[in-house]
Image 1 (cartoon, one colour):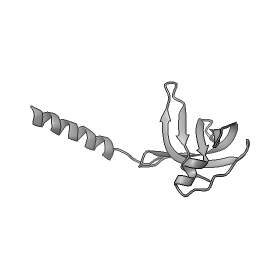
Image 2 (cartoon, rainbow, N blue to C red):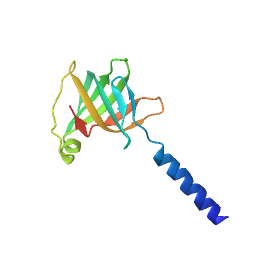
Image 3 (cartoon, one colour):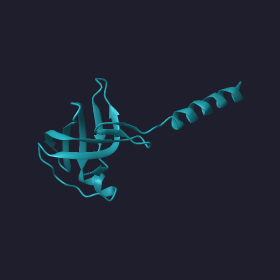
Amino acid sequence: MKYLFITALFSVTALTFSSCKTVKANDVAQIENENLRVNGKIIHIENGKDGYVATLLTNDNKEYTATISIVNLNKRGQNYKKYDVGETITVEGPFWKDDSGKTYITAYKLQ
């Protein structure tokens, strides 16, 4: 019974990690290592103490919230840059969704 449980657990884990695929849809790409790349126009900025949170609107009218911080970008050899409302940027990094389906990205790469 213990062997069956361990085998089942291993199989589910292996399927979970092997099912990651690259998916592209217009301005959004899900990268294999669970990062998301989004290109969009900044429609709102909320300044913080070491960066800012930008709300991006893609060409297909989907909104994404990106946390853009000096610390996160510098840790990964990226340069921090302050963008303004109306500019178009590309952010890439890990993402998550809240209960309402809103997508948040921690920017590890910024273009």
